[in-house]
Image (cartoon, one colour):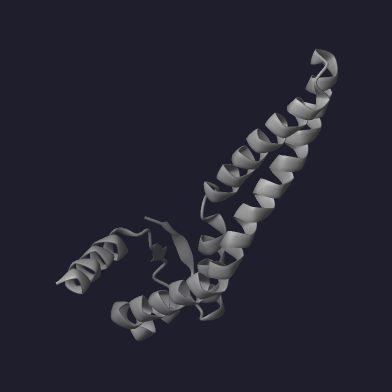
Length: 130
């Protein structure tokens, strides 16, 4: 029962996902909409597989950069208040949180570009995404 609920939720989320809209060029006209949808699905799956591992790395990289910048700012602030160590720790923690969140919330533009390129290599022209 639990697996059935999970599958149902996955289907709902997948059906609501943004998808590319294709220009009705010669390629689309020659193979039809159903075959084109299968090509879209393949390109989306390839993009997900390719980008899956780099997303976690991106968040970690953003957190690390944020921590370094925050720590430096905290140290400077700490020099003015007389407690440089405390400023360093606070700044580093705030910077890491901000950098990690910024990396996690960035738009999924890379995935769209990947899918657009994949479809272009197959002969399609992407008008946009819905």
